[in-house]
Image 1 (cartoon, rainbow, N blue to C red):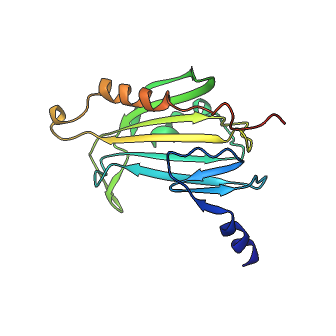
Image 2: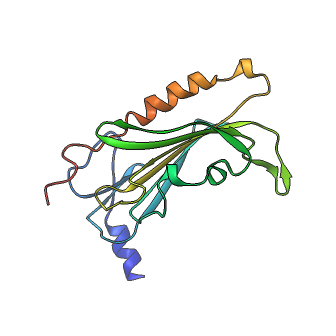
Length: 180
């Protein structure tokens, strides 16, 4: 109980536009002060309003993975229910990005019942094998369910533009970490 109390004492409210200048990590409307060398695993899902047909999963942690994103078997990424649209690396804001874009029937309607809804699933990985407290493993997934009437939804090209705009905005703030 004491450890939990110490953890909560480090959390302070924060305006989401304020960038802290001391070590710690940001969370929605808050900031956890201090530097930990302990294992971390944090994630958040973002969806606009009630639209569960288009959302993002963002997770980051500081423990080492077993594979780079692009070294994983295709069946792992596509869940044996889809296919690869694009797979490759690129650089943005000084970061090496790995991305794997897929399309398929990734979800079930109800437990035990397969769905025939087609989805796009875009995955990005950074620091997959060598994360640290200062350079955590970052994994972002964008999901988009293709509507039955495809003329009423985003095209693959439009989704690519959205994906690139968002993932190109990822950066490490220059003054985020002092020289060690």
